Image (cartoon, rainbow, N blue to C red; front, side, top):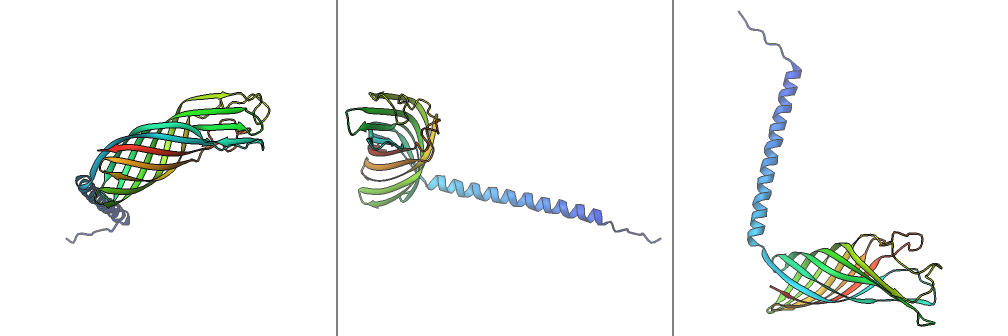
Length: 226
């Protein structure tokens, strides 16, 4: 007696789908295994270093000022720790910093002034490119930062602010973010760096009065890298 086989397209379709899923799953495992190998090689060959640093910060907040008012840099400080992960030429550098920003405003026609100091906990994430010349390393870094406002302080003798009310930037946002770039050099363990930071967010909640209040700062830093 001859057996009769009936072809069912639905069965073939299900079988094909199951095979594709198996192949896809296998490819995912191979890709994950390959990535783990490359990651382990990078970690094995990467050089780890860390350090401490601190220095002078000159901060300023962009404001729409009247003609008789002048916005100057507010002097403050910064200090923190950093970690360097990579080789001698290219490295990844996360940091944790305490930094003082703000602005100093004075009336060019009188002795009136306003000084605002903003204390931030800041987390910069940087890429660092280095040129090594024997005992001297010249490096460039660039990246982004996020920061959290810890406290603020303001002293002034202005009777009125830019818009006719008592001067204050009391309604400040708790966070800020921006970009940073810098250049420096290291001799043995000692390092010197100049860095510029530019905020990308309006730090004031009162956007009617302060439409474009963004932090800018210049850091002059001394540090030790281990």
